[in-house]
Image (cartoon, rainbow, N blue to C red):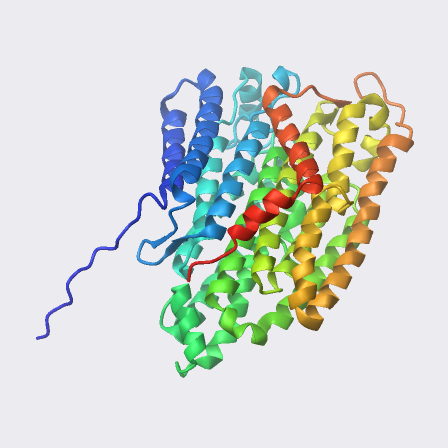
Length: 523
């Protein structure tokens, strides 16, 4: 009998993954706080713990990990420039999003979450919990688990690890989507749709991973790339279907057409702070995984599938822009806007150059900060105790609350890509590599992108006109649309979003340089 090979322990570079370890440790502590802390102190304790964890993780990342690039955990995790840049962006953005989640408007409007998520909507148990002033503080450890999954997702160098990151980030978001305080049935419907279509996307990803394993004999991205380069596996027929299934599974997460059906419902039904977190951070994580997959794993076969993904990018931009015109709910409008932005980012992804990687990362940061601030503004605007989500309710807001309207207008102009805002610089950074290195398909995508941007600009300007140049409808006593006074946390979140929008528009060079230096993958 031949002897079994000796067991070889997997080497782990703990400093390289220290930020992820800090986040998961904070999440586990949050579970303990939820289990043992007195109910009246849980909310403040969870907010402090969550923000502290995210800040500490970012500090560790900057202190040790920035100059400590490594491929660890048996080659399954790559801590390189793109991973560190996107992880840092996720930590900062999620910190800002948590400040919005913690908003309680001084007891005037209540927070965004149901006081008892496990109860039936409209039940006596839920009413009793609301009367007692309970808070759903478990949303904060769920957020940390989601961030942990996102950090794994952008650094995964193996398809199995990437799938683990996908599930770890998705499962908390399914729960958080169904925890809205108001319109509870709509929220739970959104959570169910998100869960079912999320499971569907995971199935696509797993089928694709199985086919790629059949082709390459490994799920390691570097080994897959090597197998493509050698072309001697004898299973070439599995490659393109496998790649397409993997990319489709990831395109579900970014809301690309025709895999976008969950996006409007989830954005509308989820608690508004969760919508902002989901729109910004999930997009960063998903596009980070897409970049790593197509640039590290399957770049050598791009001529076999690039045109198909380019067609999806064009369809995403057109559908997102056109359908945003027809929306009357501001959250659904921004959902379709998010779909269009996913198409814009795909244009950069398909350019296949270092400049394209840096442009996409810059776009994700610029879009993320503006999105979190925009949804924070939406959570403030109320009528009769509920969020004023219908566009007609925003009429005349510029006269009653000029500062709120001005800030929201600035963010909308950034989404439209108006010069001197972050949106203009971001689109230029994503589109320019497509023109220079994307060939005919790249030029065509940019042309469609510019036309789609013009359509979305009309949508955003329509909201601005509504706020400033349309008279507010007459409302009865207590039914006037008002903007509640935010806490310091929400004010900080909106301020960060506005400053990022202005600075990345007027003075983008430092951020573009940082993204450019971080745009090199470790193979």
